[in-house]
Image 1: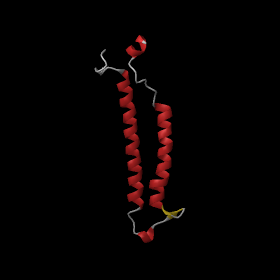
Image 2: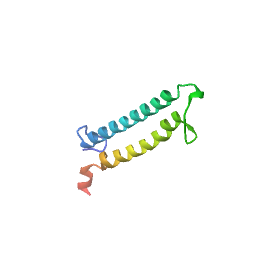
Image 3: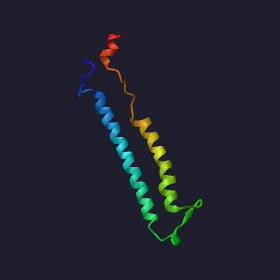
Image 4: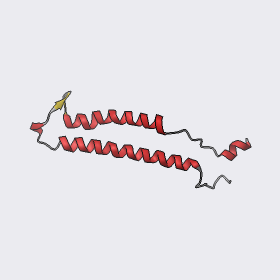
Amino acid sequence: MANNQIDPNDPRFKIANREALIGVGLVLFNFIWWFGFAYGLGSRPVEEYSYVFGLPSWFFYSCVVGFLIMVVLVIVAVKGFFVEVPFEDEEEEEIQ
């Protein structure tokens, strides 16, 4: 196959699409987590806020805990579901 042609049946596209969907899922989970805590706990009057480690609870749970959960989820996703894919075409490797 010529260098400028793209084979839509290349199995690397299936892998890339699956990994992209995992990434989109992680982003949606992060947004829902952040939004739920930020606006769920943060919509009360300031006088009613509770605090964790000196931070408003809505901020602590949405940003601090959410960040830590996302770090763990991304590590699990990358180590468990992502695979290394060669960028070179198989034909080029056979010629060399």
